[in-house]
Image (cartoon, rainbow, N blue to C red; front, side):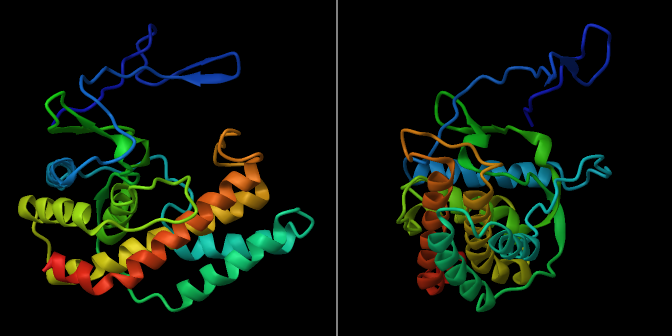
Length: 269
């Protein structure tokens, strides 16, 4: 499959260059277009089929990754970090609002229906729609940002994809809805290229809700710590308020997924 390739340094090292306290690397250019959101079911189907082809292409790769992203989709760890942060940052001006949201997140997580003990596959690890490259004709072409590759369960991998692909409102809205039309197109295209077993299929709906709750907890943590996600002062007046907005949006999306779980299960079958 097409993929960006690392370009060696002038010294011949296939790595990076440190300059002025910054780290630089160069990758080959892949022609095409990238998008911040899915526009229609046809594009959603191309996205699903592309990811399925990528999973098939990398299925036999035997590689031990040097880098492991800390707590990559370790939902339990993210929930614990939010609890710890609430105890440590009680002086934060947004603490009361974030604490109220966190209580709802913890309650939803405690009642979540799913399994954390699923088989793992070589996963991309960050399948937000902007990490997919399309041709000028709108066909799925390649995946970008390969620094998050890891062994993950399929429900976490695709749950992260669908929470991005099927949210037309984007991350900067307080209220979000999970779009079943986009989900149907992308899920059925994925499964047509790469069918999965019954156990993995049953886990997929819960995986979407899980990743929404996980990301909500991460945004809520950042709203108090203000040290990880970037923020836009055109959207919110402070780092904390922007992360709180996104935390609410992802929690709203999790609620939308839960309320439509039967429909999601029906579309997968």
